[in-house]
Length: 482
Image 1 (cartoon, rainbow, N blue to C red):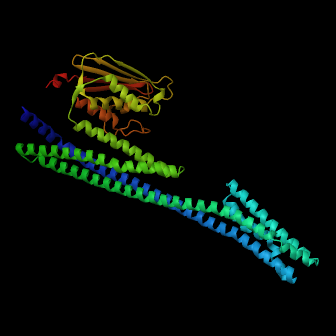
Image 2 (image 1 turned 180 degrees about the horizontal axis):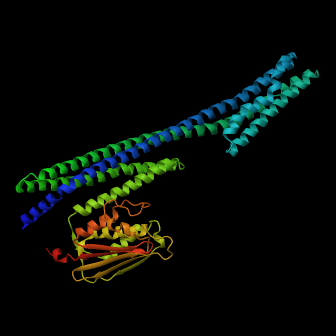
Image 3 (image 1 turned 120 degrees about the vertical axis):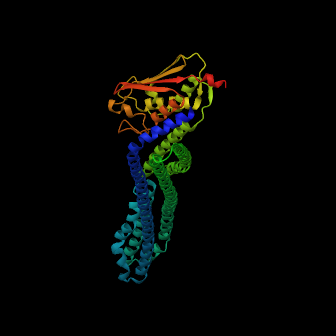
């Protein structure tokens, strides 16, 4: 009986070879295009990130350079005041008018020296206050020098000498020096923070770049292996028509073996990819805290989060397909409540009324993980595609006994599914709405899980009115005793 069944399978396979070869070729081309697009997107992300990082690095270095220049200019104002004091002494002692040349430009020089630091600290109230105090001290010192010069011009040599020897100018200089030191200390702290930020940004960039490059390498390797697998299947399929029945059975076994190898590879690869993706997401979170207005880190975080969701769904898909069924008694109230707790922070969850009716009284045995996967994906889809224009949104979950199992109905009054798309909603990666943010795997997983449990699933839907899924699952209690 088994041999006859296998021969029938091989016959069906041979019958479809002619029609499927062109489909395989088209599939290979599509995979090449998809792989190329994914790699180009990642390369574009690398280029954008590199450009943004370089721009930030240049801007920070430019700001550091401007701060250095501004501090040097402010320091020159002290030097100029000391020079002005020396010239005043020279004029008082010698009455040589050449010592008075610096007084002609004293006001302009002080303003020119202080303008750069004033502009840099325009938003810093305390620094602006210190600059005003420093400028006032410089003006007070200049006023003392002018008074000494005026006294000497009026032949009051002793009074002028006494004024410049009184130490008032030195006292003002010391006060001005203290204010300038405070200004400089604060700006040096800013420079140090900017340099540390620059260094951390460079480290983050190098780390993210390394992970993205590793991601490209993984994608290319996966693309190569999948394409290589498809080409081998195509070659085996073409040669199948030329072989004897015994050889066809052997070839059919090879196809199954290749499919199993590919499934195992996809499961392991998607699982391993989550490691570097988690690192990228963690790094992006830290980077966003350090640079909250950086839109590129936001874009990377959203893209990696979406990719992580896809990988989780792929792992779930492989789990459903490859998992051995483990029978245990179901408590549907606990399963549904656990799922609702898991989804309670989803967008729009709080505005939905959940109507739950679990009416099965007979013990029901099945695989808990697969059952939970069915309920979670359907409930999550209903939450995601709710109608926000509907004030009384609801999701109803009804469960009843049947002769040999249970019937599950999950219905909502959400956006619904357009008639043109209803025959494709269970296809892998198919999204019925171009604005959809999903991966196109949820309903595929549901259908695979239902079939894994030897059940059936149907649905009916009207756009803007809602969707109802009806699932029939057999009670496997007969198997639980074996």
